[in-house]
Image 1 (spheres, rainbow, N blue to C red):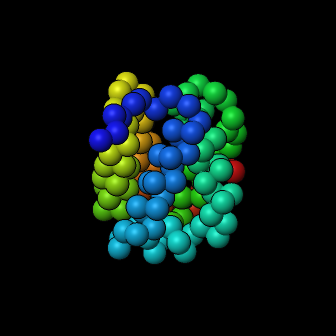
Image 2 (cartoon, rainbow, N blue to C red):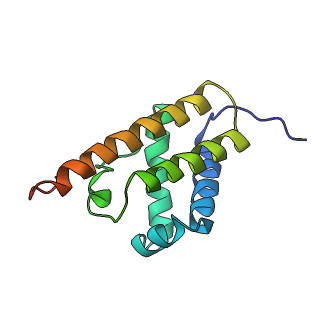
Length: 130
């Protein structure tokens, strides 16, 4: 049995991101949405590596705004709840420790923020800044 460690480096981030998105693609609720929305998986995964590396390891390799691509997707609370469930399960299966806990906390906060922003933009003619 392999002993779990905390998320400590970019290789750990890559394992987390790759495993998570593999799980998402297999999910009956989220899979079709992600497969339909992401045209270039290698590019998307690279972007996600940099995003989580910046957020969790304080190594600033990501630039951009993560919200705009999600603004007009056909998603709601059910989708976000499933996303969180898969993300937390993936983290728990692979890692344990302070940064792993932070990854779960940050994913929860990000999902909450995205839901609020999506609700706002659906109620207005405004568009998010890119």
